[in-house]
Length: 336
Image (cartoon, rainbow, N blue to C red; front, top):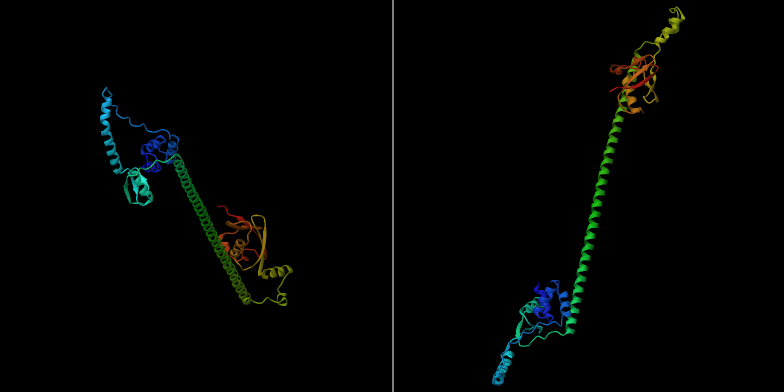
């Protein structure tokens, strides 16, 4: 049972015992249910103390008559004594009267007043109209406090929702930023890989061109060192037959280039012209850079006559391998 609830009910004019009883009956649920119970049971009063019965005999009138002067004196003495006895506590600041120290403490805590004195005035109980007015005021205060609490809860809920939305938005933006950074990293990596591949291809092309230029220069130097061909007048006396003349001219004919037709594993064909002095490794490099049938190791072969080129053949010139002036090369996948 809360002492503050008892003090509030006592401050409204109810006795302390009635306040305690009302709070106990209503299950200590607060001031408002207790006030409603007190107003509903206002007619119920505490049983008065029954005076002690005195035996009345035959000599009662005499004794009563004899006792009347004493009673009058006692009554007068009691009135004087009651007039001097403190009947309540008074707040010197606001003038309110209180019946108990509990009410004084509650008023001091509530108002901040700290000056009290004893008073011979008796605190008058509240009338029904005053009680209803007090109850109405209390209900309005309770409504205001309930409204303030609801507004506070609503504001707190709104702030929590704003915080939740803001946190969710910040998390979404952070996740999006991380995804953008990861995408930029992937794009940058791919760009570097493409540039590296491009530079590698360029180096291969430059090496091929350099090899071609070197072979051309070597072929040109070799042709300059060869003896000039014999004139027809010089060889005609020694030729015994037309067949021998044809054979001699065929041997001396020199091809500087060869046209190769390359058949891929997917059935497609690519054609390219190479120098007759280029090595077979140049043909393999060209196939690596231009094939359209996928990747993987392969071997080269010819059909007529059938020949499968080995690793040693890749260092030999094309004319030595019999691939001049033209030939068909077939690509065959190597079995792993």
